[in-house]
Length: 105
Image 1 (tube, rainbow, N blue to C red):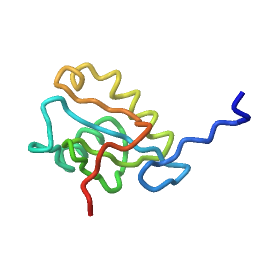
Image 2 (cartoon, rainbow, N blue to C red):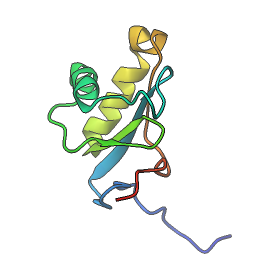
Image 3 (spheres, one colour):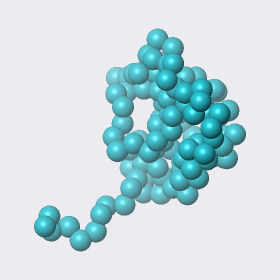
Image 4 (cartoon, rainbow, N blue to C red):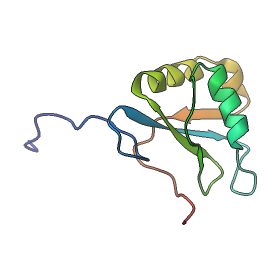
């Protein structure tokens, strides 16, 4: 109906790299006055098997976004979804369709 035959492959929302996926992480008790720290996120994400992380960017709402390779991003989201403890303490992980509001530079 739309004339499209293929769906554009997913890519990083931060850099537009086709092999990368953007991950959005937040914790229910956090907001812009109590942001997640990059070191806190790195510790949690590495415990889920992410491997090395690049730059972690803080969003206006206190959440964070970062890029991972496509396969690692899928594995990270699967691991996070299966981790009852992280879910019970309010951690959330997603591959967003758009970026949350980011600080103006």
